[in-house]
Figure: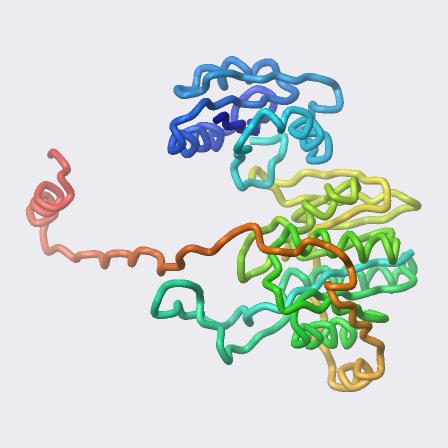
Length: 96
Length: 250
């Protein structure tokens, strides 16, 4: 079983909530992937979180501001590969 | 421009709910109910847009048992033009509500659909987002300010780090934060007038949507009680307590 975690960030820093989501996902003892949209700087940070097996990185100008409509479409395009899609219950924004 | 406002009947926000003895749910038997506070912000915003001449008709919609017509009456008394009750005795969770609201939106074709940012009973904050996604419409959630010019909506969102400003093309879905406005009080004459305004009832069975709950509530419990603080008489006593009880090495 694979879990996809949605990364929230501000372009340069990964939001701490992502690490919390990874910790929570470890309860399932399964593979954890993190989806980073829009910011290459954040990819390495996501990859360095203990427990993350793979980081999926998507970049396009329209993804730069992490707008719900665009990111949802992105998640949907890879969702069939995952049993759980996990994210922090936040306002999900391109900010600190 | 038509505006659709979704309103939910919830436990009155002043009530301190009690948990049932078996921990299966909260006990709301006989408890005072009312309009979800954030939905009142949504209604109020619709009214202001109408008063500015930007909206022509405000439709309030509520989903649930027949008692939900109470909150529709409240919306009508505030100034909504007509109301729709989507009636069912089945427990409605956010996904089902979003699917049902989609049917209403497709029927009424409002330029703007307003909801409260979350309901104070389940605190889910899901419905607006799901509705926008199902309709493939743009969304502005946790909105604390709204401006409409021609066919564009500018919303300021209250987000975790501060605020975020978005512009959306209409039609769109917006969920209201408390800071959006201060809802007007309902005056008795308006309450009386509201009785004459129409409430249309639609049965969920007529709408052909699968509204079965997807989530099962397993347990409800009180939050852990915060331990009382201890007053100490001297620094020595403070150090002793820290070492003995808190395991602090000093």
